[in-house]
Image (cartoon, rainbow, N blue to C red):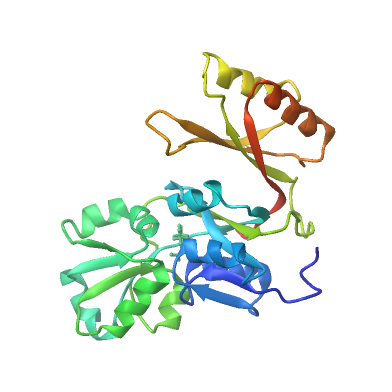
Length: 290
Ligand SMILES: O=C(O)C(=O)C[C@]1(C(=O)O)C=C[C@@H](O)C=C1
């Protein structure tokens, strides 16, 4: 599928100027983007066919997986991943221009929980004890600050949010570690993948693997060897709670190969023979906007 032929409707975590919005416009262009208040709303919109795609954050380099995305995507959705968008993330401390001189006395700092967590050390050293308030997105925090000049509060958000909501840049680049990236995935009801453009690397396939109930010792080792002896390169393996009881997990596995490759098909058969349940979220390419 090519992006040059038509303009699809795409749900993203809004409002305007969130990181999800930046990721969506880098990948799809500025047309057809539809803001939604939460990540579950984005996933629901594509699942119900209200939009053609949703773009949602999946994993951050500093903070790990985005729990809301994992919960709604891996627990009962019938969606597929059609592309991955990798975006560098820079967080800034923003205040209303009327409060620019009172930055040292701010009463609270607001943002998306992942964004707040990315700046934890900065807060510890510069704003110890100042309450951290969670918002649904960084842009929602920026919008709130712009609409409440009477409150001496700050938002953590990106440069586009500073411009969009006319906020004062109190401090630039407050994220604790320099290498800060987030992986976003483009979700669709159909199994498809966006054409390889630019210097995009190999295909990637995301799998959800569940072990059999009578969990014998060495099972995880057996699973890994299914991929290892076929020389199928895993770029990620993560265990997540199945939410059926303490100690029950499933694995999210990213394999750097197309699922139609005969080696992958063989791996699926062998995993099934080991009584594992496998669900594929599809094969897609990674688009790196670093
Ligand atoms: O709040 C936003 O701007 C988002 O798009 C969400 C989100 C996230 O869920 O991790 C995306 C990228 C950054 O890591 C911080 C926040």
